[in-house]
Amino acid sequence: MLNIDDLPHLVIGSCLEVHRELGTTMPDYGYRAALAHELRMREIVFQQDVPVMMDYKGERLPCDASLDFLVENQMVVVIVAMGQSSMDKRRLVGLMRAGGYKQGLMVDFSSSDLRSGIKRISMEMTKS
Picture 1 (cartoon, rainbow, N blue to C red):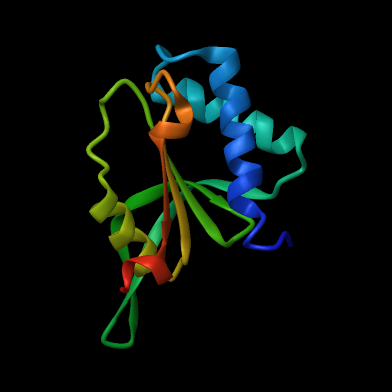
Picture 2: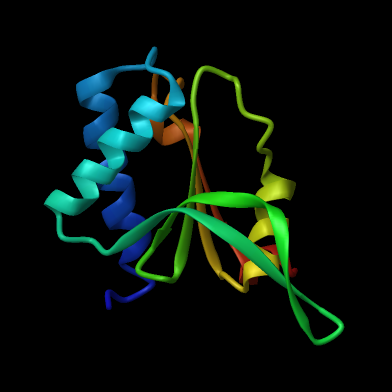
């Protein structure tokens, strides 16, 4: 398992490569497929379309949501493209909290400068 401090840099590097190859006009499913391929090529362990479960009064309950990627069982990655996602930072934080994940990236591939289209979220940062 990779160190959680290294994960954002590795995943962002993968996203930058996908963005360099595909540009800004691909639908989100295209970016998901390309990012999955890029992560596999880099031998980064991940799952796609991971259902979100939450704890409520001692029970694990399914939410009507899934994570685009769960990387190394530690970090959530959500893909946004062409402005067609209802995902916002607060919703991602809620999904991360429900699943108990401490790190997350929301990647908007429709940004011409991808670095400005990436929101890095750390639960430690959001608690302050």
